[in-house]
Image (cartoon, rainbow, N blue to C red; front, side, top):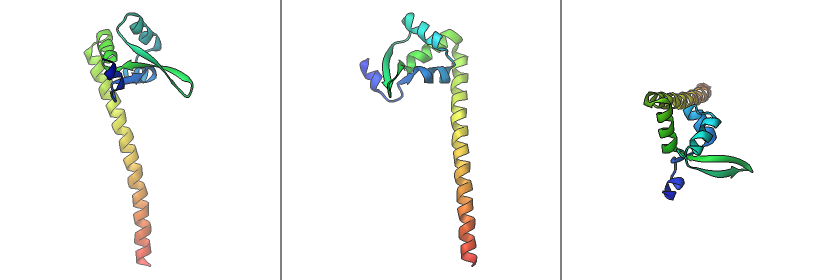
Amino acid sequence: MSSEWNQKGATLSDKTARKEFGLTQEEIIDGIRLGKLDYRENHVHGNPYLRLLRREVEAFVSDKRGPNYLKQRRAKTELAQVNRELKSMKEQVRVLEVRKSMLVAQLAE
């Protein structure tokens, strides 16, 4: 089971759990006290945070708020990621269009 703590994507910070699943810090602490959430303490640049197992957080949220809530949160999170990627790509297209215009103008000279 300790290998799960080392797998990419298998853990998340308490801050990410709050953002991604709409939990409060108090709910996370309650989940830990009830034994539903395992955690490890970590530090980044001297700042402490809790590392949680993603599967336990998902099960905790599903039990607490129902499976539909979890599906909606996942869809909302993925939609936000897609929107960020689209925004980035639109900016890349804009930059390339400007560069294209400059090159076409150079060729016309």
